[in-house]
Image 1: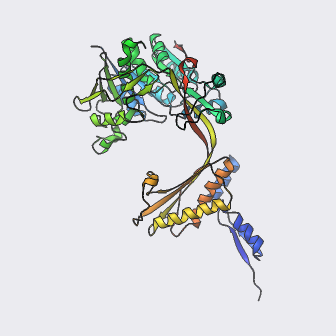
Image 2: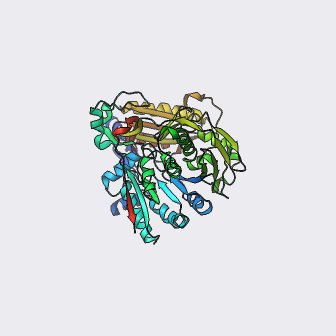
Image 3: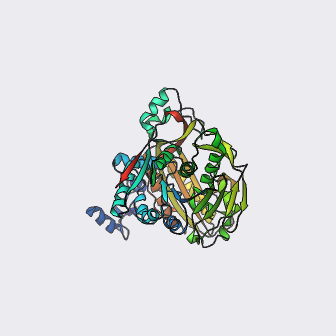
Length: 51
Length: 454
């Protein structure tokens, strides 16, 4: 049966890099998802653009 | 007998304004002293001045003077303030502008500066003076020389007196000793000089300056009297009635909150001193063990029998130098097993730092609510606490390394044990370290002038 292997590489802006890197190196994931955005992160990013 | 009434209007950069204003409004003080400078404030102000040559003073002086001058000028109250910081001339120009804007009439501003020895510190060093570190005993400043950002001598009251003699209504200084803000007006009013004849009188002025210079710290702040301090949220700042015979009464603004009694005065006598028989200031040396305290009615304490010795040949100098960066993080743990969670987390973070190969100049990990204040004196006894916090603070050579500390600590907000709670995000900041030392009095070049406001 077909299976897809997917991992999580980040949960927040500032999450660790090396577990994502080690996942890429050592596992057989086909996809890695990276989330960096919390509720107000968009507002901060918008502000940075304006600033 | 002639007496001079002098109050304290500020003890630190950011102190309250309204107790100073209430003192000016409600009491019969003739002088108010304002201190804004701590050991490393001059380093901060120097850096501000390096970025903008028109800054480098305590900017609070602007809102403060806007409120105070309309009260002090009609009453003839003179103010002596070290808000000039690293740029007394600019501070004086600002005050001049305020006086004109408020149409307060002709006034004289005395400006005292020249406490900055950094421009010629190498000359002093090359003549053999080593600037030994008074805290650590390290013999000379050569190791830190290239990182020095400020070196200011704690000048005495000499030029404050001179400018009061020149008719100054306000005196704005740089780094004079906090104490000199009070000793200056007293010596001026009583006509004392630094000859042997006045040693005990000046020691009395030094003692009284010490008692009042930290504003609320003698009127119920930071006191064992905290339970009985009246309306501490309306705390009054201290006032000294100083008599020509060298005796004084310590009191506070009429109708204000707080408390002054024998206990609060004793507490403050012991504050920030080393040898109580030798409290060394640039204007004189006090022996706090000789004096007597007696209560003289409510919120009034009489201080008598003050004695001391002649002023020293050296001045204290605070050298500020760049000493790496601090990275910091906070994380909190709830019941159950709060302390065990904190201990687990300490191991976690130490292992992380090892894994990342981080090098520290200094690393501190404290359990908030357990041993943050008491350090090793506090036993790690699990009392089934409701909550425990963990503070991780490291000092590193580079900004990047300090940022790693901050970042790793934030990971704990989600990777710590069950129930772990977010701490406060804290920015990495540069560390300016303090190198306290002495400098021969005669090599320091203080200057002063009168700035006229017409």
